[in-house]
Amino acid sequence: MPKVLIFYHFLHPDDVVSAVLFTDLAVELAQRGWDVTAMPSNRSCWHSSTKYPAREVLKGVQIRRVWRPGFPQHTTLGRFCNAAWMALRWGLKAIAEKPDLVILGTDPVLSVTAASIWKILRPKTKVAHWCFDLYPEAAIADGILSRDSRFLALLKPILAHAYRSCDLLADLGPCMSKRLRVYGSQARQATVTPWALAEPGHPVPVDRAERASIFGSAPLALLYAGNFGRAHSSDVLLELARKLEPAGAKVVFSVRGNKADALRRDAASISNVTFAPFTDQEHLEKRLCSADIHVVSLRSDWTGMVVPSKFFGALAVGRPVLFAGSPDAAIAHWIREHKVGWVLTPDTLEAVAAELIEYCQEPERHEQMFRHCYAVYQTHFSKKLMVDQWDGELRALLGSARTVAAEREKLALTR
Image 1 (cartoon, one colour):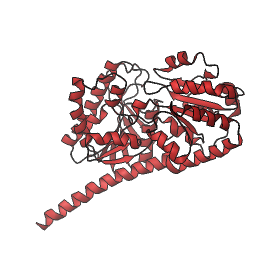
Image 2 (cartoon, one colour):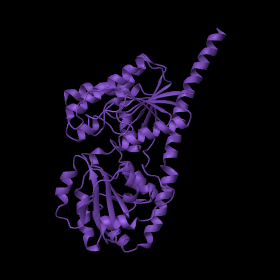
Image 3 (cartoon, rainbow, N blue to C red):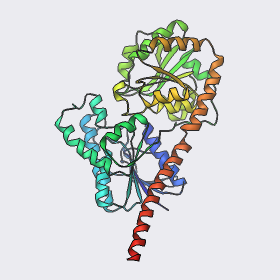
Image 4 (cartoon, rainbow, N blue to C red):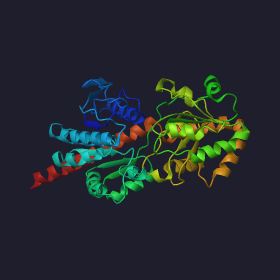
């Protein structure tokens, strides 16, 4: 039974999307015959003062939590200290651990640097990196780092070495894959997208009670549900809402994040934009199924640095997506390729508004679109497909390593 270690800052029981996804990955690999040990932090994602047990077993996964100081996650210095601490602790695990494979995530930032330590201490261990977001690129886009800073000049060769230490780089889409290639790694690259947190067994009809509670009698309901932070923008979305107001369409934000308050201020004067309380995972499906269209946004300068998982959650329940972001983003590419929504930019604002008003007036198209979006998710993005791909990629890494080892042993015997 091949042994794999999973290093990610937050796992079960935290409910942040990436924590749920990495927990799912660990559990699913265990069910596919892997010996899985996960090593998250011992502290909660949302409250650094909250600690979890040092050891736990979850559906066949051994969880061994790594102690770290209570540096606050909501400050830049706190996040940096947490990142340095966890990367070092994970890297030094190579002294005592002898897994076949290591999977590194991207929380905390710069976690991939642990790959360099593993390749020095355990050169035979294969290292896979699932890249959810790119740093320092995201910090540059956010204005936290300057492109000509000394820190960045020091960091780039360290990151380049870390990426070259990986045997597999798993990205979230072609735009991210393009950015990763800049580092010159010879690692195998694969696109493995996030899956939806709720995966119903059929296209889910509109939940009328939930819809009435947050959209009233609006003939077209657009929902933005999830995090709204530094990577997201609202200008063109709010302008679209104004244009849809005469048609009776309503836009509802059910959000949390460090830009949520600013969003509320910006939308205060728009009558058909309202806010609903953030919902927990237990009620997530009901909330997602209250809308006709799901809204996803990403600032253009963040293209290729993150891929919002809300896109996959929308398709999983059979809802089309309105994406406000760069036409070069992976989500824009998938929307065009699979015909599952609309790409909103300042240049397409008028055309998209006209299309949505027409869509609003043709409710018979909605059910057809729901079925189509659900089928696209099941065919291209489901959890089973993605974990099967992970399983195959990891076994291929081990297979190539064992083939090389066998050939070397055979050669030694013939000498």
